[in-house]
Image 1 (cartoon, one colour):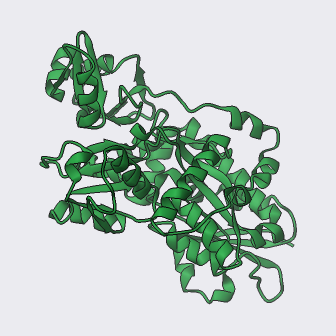
Image 2 (image 1 turned 45 degrees about the vertical axis):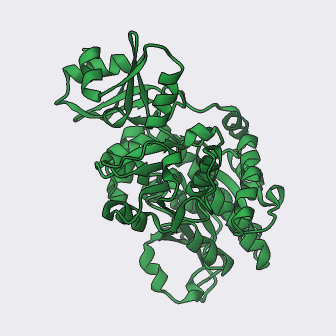
Length: 447
């Protein structure tokens, strides 16, 4: 029997429910539909979603099973993780990808309904928490989290960005439940609220902060990496699907690893492909997913990420979004270990790529790195008409940011970039003679 794996668009949502789910079959029993839920604009899931879909690696892995079955892959795109969880617990999505806080809600909901799910791999992560950022309007007089007292802040409750907001406010001496008016909104709605002035700040996950800053519609107020707590996105699968179709799940994880290698080997091309599929600017995609971007992509389920997931439970419990979550029972890396074989141990031990100053020039399919931010500025000053995007790592947290949107500090001969003003002020306060300078002045000094 000829074997074929076919990618089906989100229009498949209109098909009868009997055509969804891991074991849904055609009348002759020769076809299996595998439904994958993903978030195209949450670009730290692209190796299990947008990029993986465009590359066709999953379908190719399914074709290679040679088991006499025709596989049909249905890709369903969502804005957040919550509807993916709802569809999974209803038996309509087999494999999904989402952020760490939604993963916990996925685990809790699955157990509650007797439809358990498991975290089977990781997509993108940042060990310090730099995937989440609090931004405010470009002309806002807000300069720190303490300034948010009594203000309206938009976020998506139950998301990692909400967790960042709660923790960051706690460290600033504020209570997210009492000292601010929290607006529970989808990212796009929150972005509109910020633009309209009905929200004073927005706490969101990748890629919204970078997108709004790149568009000149926001400026960074708080770099999530200041928490120094890992945040990540991962892949979850229904337990019954994994047990009935282990070879299919392993095929997905092999394909995810291939997509990860493709992204790491061809970061500019991958950014362009994701940009084309999502409508996001490639410069924003690269900020997060580039060679030295904010996210590191690796399917290995690292112990440090699992430990962070356990710490996240208390935030969700305090918000009354869930009770206790058995993280150890939820995490199941057996399938990815088997899928990747000896390569898994290497991936597990691999450190994240170091932050570097980086320039993407017009017409180039590779970028150029520099030893220091000052060296990058000197290059930009000489080639301003040719620079498509310039990225620099925050001098304190290492979070990559747009050079022209960073807060710059002159400290002697050094020119140091920071994502947010409070981080820059903290540095200046501890270094005599250091002062904040404009981007124009930084360029002039470097040249």
